[in-house]
Length: 532
Image (cartoon, rainbow, N blue to C red):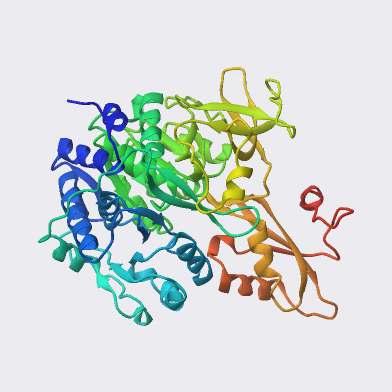
């Protein structure tokens, strides 16, 4: 029987990889979500039904299908169905505002949306401004036999089909899998830009499958066939949880403990206390929150192998508190939506917190470059650039952005400044871009500034990230008031909250006389950063 890494290397598509795993692990539990359970073979069976339904209503290979839901059983089922058809999956944050959602759906050319009923209001408000033809509404209990209360779809959504009905209708239909080559696209994974609107990183089946095989080879200790239990609190619409938690652990027979709302620490702790998890992925704020819960120390940590922090740097204080409770420190990995995502990963088994991001995973070439694209000496700072089979070919319908994202010799520019250490590991020390990372989510200053600048009484503003014990970084906005304006910090925050996802909303407002600029009028955020 083929091993997980052999299946990842030989599969022609994500669908084939998932199908092979479902056949190998059969009736073993693949996912839990609160009291709900879903086996490997049942996930594939329901995914087949969804594919048949989608095919019957006109979805075919190459069509863009958006999936907009928190961590529920419906997510892997929908992914399986979309991938069987050879459609392009467009993962969408269910907390997006109407403006953000409208842009992404239109940019990707989405005609089919699968959305959680409880977060359908944003789409309902902009449906007429999109090209979406069909909507399928997910409810909490979909994919299980349990009748769990779920919010209804927004009344303004109009005509939509329930996910459960789609599965029932598709169960009586036949649908052959599409013929898919590894080089063909599987995902449009949207990531914000430092300027302009968000862009869709084009990820092929080869990109994702290569990253799975690379990770298996890099640290086989955390991917033992049929033995792992992984806690998935990071949302699966995020590339980290999609590839690592869902696909990597599904492919090696692991069980996923899905956390739908990690902010509900009582329910979160209850879900993992008796799970006997072996691996947990998360961001600093999540790990810090768990350490403060009074019942978390009662969790069974006897089988824990690794707790992997991603998205934003872990704080040493968080890791120390985590280790005092669980017995192991946090380790870190590094990657981006454009790299499927893993470029580097620290090895499990560390005895203390190191703060580094580990070494390059197999098949990945990394260089650190100065501003002239020359490699820097060991121990000196340089922009981390990478090449490997997991790296995107570029951005969807963004030729200029694609060209800017690569060096002349084909290395992807990450925008992060790193140092290479003697033992082959890397440490992120700064960001070339001005991106702010709040609890693992990217926030781009230009986006915040553009919204805040439309608030009455704001002449101009500048955004940057500041340290925050809970979220790693928080958004701080420096504001120049109009003469005679009585606008307050609360007014600006309320204005931003109406137009942006919560994690993008400024947490701190500071009024200043002027925004520092260069001789040519370019905003100098670095001056504000130094003075802050």
